[in-house]
Amino acid sequence: VTATGQRRSGTSVRLENLSKKFGTTTAVRQANLEIDHGEFMTLLGPSGCGKTTILSMILGILEPSEGHIYFNNQMIDALPMNKRDVGMVFQNYALFPHMTVAKNVGFGLEMRKVPKKEREKRVQEALEMVQLSDFADRFPKELSGGQQQRVALARALVIRPKVLLLDEPLSNLDAKLRKEMRIQLKKLHSELKITTIYVTHDQEEALSLSTKIAVMSNGVIQQIGTPQQIFLRPKNYFVANFIGYANFIEGTLVDEKGGRFLFRSESGKELLVQKDEHHRIGQKVMLTIKPENLRIVDQDAGESSVNVCPGRILVSDYVGSTTEYQIKAEGGDIFKVSVLGLKSYTPGHDVCLYFDPDALIIIDKELKS
Ligand code: ATP
Image (cartoon, rainbow, N blue to C red; front, side, top):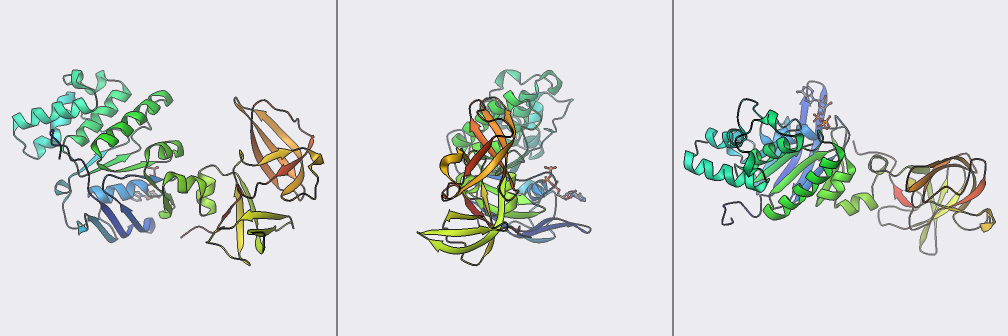
């Protein structure tokens, strides 16, 4: 606890086999997740995958159908919402329109029967944290979107939460403000170190803010890891596709050669790929490679060269700093390639694709279900 009373390190949170059913819909299926003291954990996934449902169960406004929630290894299943010390910022901020900024921020303290003097001090403190001290007497409608968002954040922080839940807090802001607020959030987290669980479908936000990411699909956590682990080592097709790997080849790991796996695609193309400890010879897998890691090389690189495949440019699209190509490879597969700079090939041009063994990643075709 610091001089201003703010907790320096939050609480650890653990979800154990947590499920939520709404009638016949399973919104969350057997979620297991550990969130350390002071961690910034992002739940990343498309609309409807169960992110908000997880937050609602941690907040205590929804009861799990199965499983348990622990704060610092103590089960809190039976603890009512107002005893959980969880602060939440909703997507639409949910400010009270008829109350001033100060009243909005102090509301939670009033509910908790904190004496007036103490309340005023803490409201002041929370407004300072989000740099809105001069706006205490305004009403929400007299504030910009970004300012309203910061009031919502101050209102969550004022109760000195052990855990902070943020449900797409930046989604109503324009692109520029979203970036600014992202930086402010990051700064605030590094100062306060409150255990934070953040919900978004925006991979850039997840990458920039999080210490850990859990990728979700259809109520199921597909992969948990650091931003680097998720973005450089996606485990399955869903995760890879969601974070921007655009090229996928199905086939089998048929052999081992010079410390690498030899992969044979369903159309018979052979590729060397880096080995990893999760896969073995004989396994049916998928290979994936990012458009920016797939390279176009001249035809005279030769068709017989390792990991080179002839193809023809179908589409070339200059989109600012890069040119995006679609290339039809021998065998019929279409690959996406992104190259820095202006276009140097036009549709119809014959080229070769080079699949760098170290940039090819082996993933599982199947999702966790
Ligand atoms: P978004 O990004 O759109 O907010 P989300 O990942 O947060 O989506 P949830 O709001 O958790 O998704 O919803 C998960 C699933 O549960 C969805 O299929 C949704 O329709 C369903 N669901 C959520 N709340 C209820 C409810 N109260 N009654 C019935 N079904 C619900």
